[in-house]
Each structure stands twice: as structure tokens, then as C-alpha cells.
Length: 305
Ligand code: NAP
Image (cartoon, rainbow, N blue to C red; front, side, top):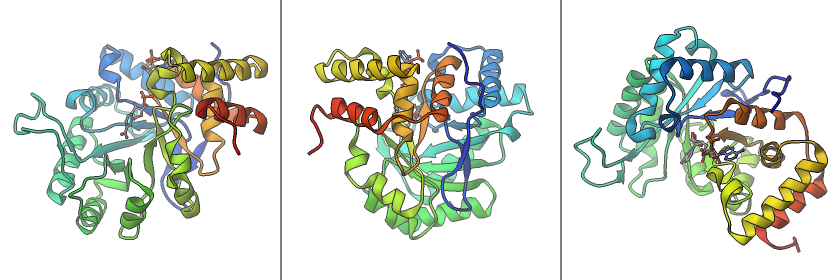
């Protein structure tokens, strides 16, 4: 597979706000990639060379191990940190041997936990600041004022440059955004999961001029592997568009996502640099409107009215 010659463009998630690469490299699965530290450094370097400068983390990834793996790479090659943006998340507590005090999987969006989790992320990553810290999931016990206060404190102390949320509804997003300016809402979206397009998540963000980040853009790989009848039909349509336009299958899916006017930033999930390059290639072309709707029709199993 050939790599796109054009570097990945950059995008401000909100006016005068955080600038990220349009394609973000997701680190959730990094512990499965089985990369020695030199290979991790090489992967990061090659992402940066393509203009993919933003890396998505969470405290819990890899059973609390991924930030440490990434931090080890940053320590091995100290020039890397200044060339990238690091996104991380907090607010989920897993039952884990890495956290023996946790007796039940639960959420914690108390100010004390947000601050402690962020400080631990900084230690694991070996950096002084996060470019963006997100609340990972909406918490039924979440107090908007308390979260806003914790975010503001971390920003004042220089530990976090920007703040945001993940998996929030439009109303939850707007409630917190009234108290502290949020950079993004990171949500699941793909042709296999089109919810945010129809439940006001994307419309609300577009109205505010805030770009969403999109996780599992390839359905976590199910777009390639699912034997579900609808997934097979969808795969056939994407394949047809890819063949006719001379793009890779994955590039067509990324272009389909990025066509949305809310300006989503897809997060890749692969440890293969070619897969990241497929996502970057999608920033260089646009789908015909008829092809975009053919993919939507296959995704939903019915025509628009
Ligand atoms: P994804 O791109 O939808 O799925 C990645 C999976 O698809 C990998 O297992 C990958 O395998 C496979 N894949 C990619 N290209 C393929 C191809 N051409 N053929 C076959 N399989 C292929 O993304 P994701 O990993 O589910 O999510 C991306 C990122 O989103 C995560 O790393 C994380 O940063 C973020 N995330 C956030 C949340 C949240 O709640 N905020 C939740 C989940 C994920 P290979 O590695 O073999 O390519």
C-alpha cells in the first residue's frame, strides 16, 4: 500500500482552541501490538512524519498499562513530546490488579479523582502536561459544577491545556460546556454505528462550531470481519465505491466520516502504519454525494424518505 504524499491536515476543534491533526492515532490497543520500545518509537515517528501528531489515550487502556508503554517511548526519544498532542481520559475505575482498591467497576467524576487520575497519567506518560483531558463516560453521579472546577484548576496549574468529554449526550455536553469551554465530545461513529448523526450529537456540536472526535471508525474492525447480513451488504457497497474511485476500502470509510459538516476527527485503532496512512489518504479526496448516500443506505438497510 502506498502512503499518501500529502501530510495530514490540522484542525482547530473550536475557534481559537485546540489544534489537532485531522487523523488522530488511537492507542487503546497498543498493549496488543507487542512492540518493543524501539518499534513504539518508530511507529510514533512514522505517524509524526505523516502529520498525525495527535495521540489518543485513557488511563485505563491496556488495563492501565498503555500510558506507561507510550511514556517509555517518549523517554527513549525525548524530542518526540514537543512534536505531538497527547489526549487522555479519566473517570472510569476498573477492577484490576493494577488498582487493588477498586472493588466494583464504576465511574468517578469527583474533583479529587479527576485531579489524581490526571496527575497519574502525567507520571505514566513522563510529561508535564496533557494537551486535552476528557471525562471518559457520563457519570450518573456527575456534578457539572464540580467537574468544571476540577478542569479549571488543572488548566490553571498548567497540567492540562484543554478539556473535553467523551460519550456525552448533546444535553450533557452543553450543560458542562456552559461552565467550562469544552474542546470536543469523543463519540463512537462509523457506518456500523450511525447514532450521533441522528440523536443531535453532531448537529449540536456543529451549531457550536466544535468538532467531535470519532472512535471505532471502522467498527472496531467489524466492518472487515462481521458476517452479519447488513455488514456484508455494506462491505459490498464500500468495496464497489473503493474499486471505482481507486481508493482503499478503509480510506472510503474515513472519507465518508469526514464528509460530515461537524468536521469529525477520526481516531485510528491499528498498530500498522499502512492503516494510519489509509486514514490520512482520506483527507485528500471527497466522495460524490451519491456514493455517500449509497453507503448510508447500505448502513441503515433502507433508502432515505
Ligand atoms: P477501528 O479503526 O474501528 O478498529 C481498529 C481495529 O480494526 C483493529 O483491531 C484493526 O486491526 C482492525 N483493522 C483496521 N484496518 C483493518 C483492515 N484493513 N483489515 C482488517 N482489520 C482492520 O478503531 P478502534 O481501535 O475500535 O478505536 C480507535 C481508537 O478510538 C482507540 O485506539 C481509542 O483511542 C479510541 N476509543 C475511544 C473510546 C471512548 O470511549 N472514548 C472507546 C473505544 C476506542 P489491525 O491492528 O490488525 O489493523
